[in-house]
Amino acid sequence: MIDLFFEILIANAAHHRYASQICEEMEHSSKQRGTGISKRSPEMIMEKMSAGKAVIALTHDGQWAGFCYIESWEDGKFVSNSGLIVAPSFRKGGLARKIKNEIFELSQMKYPNAKIFGLTTSAAVMRINSQMGYEPVIYSEITEDENFWEGCKSCVNYEILISKGKKNCFCTAMLFEPMAEIKEMSQPQPLKQLAS
Image (cartoon, rainbow, N blue to C red; front, side):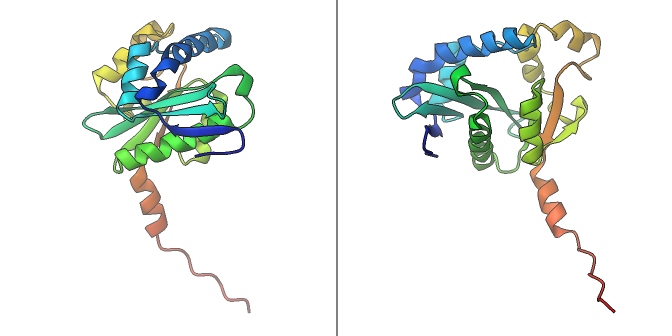
C-alpha cells in the first residue's frame, strides 16, 4: 500500500537494517507507557521479515515509520498480529490503523481459516481491533500453545499471569473468527414489515 506519506509493504531481507531500531523502540515505548511487553530480538524480527510474515511502513525517503508481524500457533489454527509499533514522530496520524489493516490482510491470505487474536494493554489497539471485527474474549478462547505463553516471560507482568493460571492478566485478549463473519452473513434476515 502506498499513500501520500508512507509506503506500507510486506517486509523482506532488504529491511533487516531496521530490526535493531524496531526492537529498541518497542522496549522504549513499553517503558514509557509503564506496561509489560514481550521482548523481541533483532534476529527474531529479521526472521519474520525474511519469511514474509511482517509488514513495515517507510517514509518515501526510506525512514522507518512502523512495523508489525505474524505468529502462528497450533499448526495455523491460531494467528496473532504482534509487535505493532509506530515510530514516535509518526504517531497519532492513523499509521497504526493502516499497518494493522495490512497485517490483518496478510494474515488472512497466509492463514485463511485461522482465528486471529491479540493480547494488548493499548486502548488505541483495542479500538482498531474492535473496528476490524475482533471481540474481547477470555484467555481460554485463544491458543493454549505453551510456546505462545513462553513469549510472555520477558513481560514485567509475567508473575501475575502465572499466579492467575494463565486465565487473565493486564492484557485484554481479542479474537477475530473468520467463520463468525460467514455465519453472520448467512443468517436469515427478518422480513421487513409492509407499511399499511
